[in-house]
Amino acid sequence: MKNLSKLNRTLKPYYLKLFIATIAVLAVILIFGRKLNIIFFVTSLLIIATVSTFYHNFFKSPINFELIKFSTILTAASYGAVIGLATGIISTLASKILSEKLDHTAMPSLLGIAVIAVLADLFSNWNITALGITMVIAYHAITAPIQLATGGTLLYGAIYVGSNVLFNILLFTRFAPAIIKLM
Image (cartoon, rainbow, N blue to C red; front, top):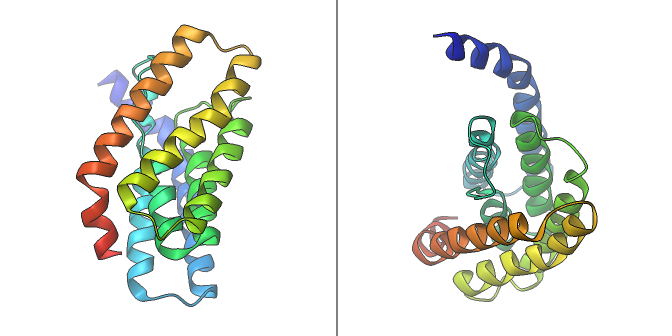
């Protein structure tokens, strides 16, 4: 009961920020005049990506199961770089705030997310499984050396990258082909 009360106090300040981020994404979508289903998919993927790192509040581990790269790549490949960038940047920042990890690691993450959003749009004619796996590996090729240079350890980084790549391989082989058809 004590942990539930603490969780409730911790989350309340972020509800407004998450709501504002969602409204910002919806505004970008409406400005660019896309189909109505874009609102559903982008908002859903944005929220899912944002909360996918919340487990970090309870389990301190290098194992990394998150949906930010998955959501960014799907939206960029389906709706273009601008919407992919918005999804990736907003969900990265919101997830770091929500999991109380907004620190020096945010900049390399944002750089990696920006690069894969643009590349996913440029190569959106690729098969989504190949595109997704390639973009996840590209993300880690960009961010891992920076994380190591800023104080990360090789063992932690290897587990972090390895678990995230394996998780995204599962996502892009099992779920992405069906989701991209709906988008």
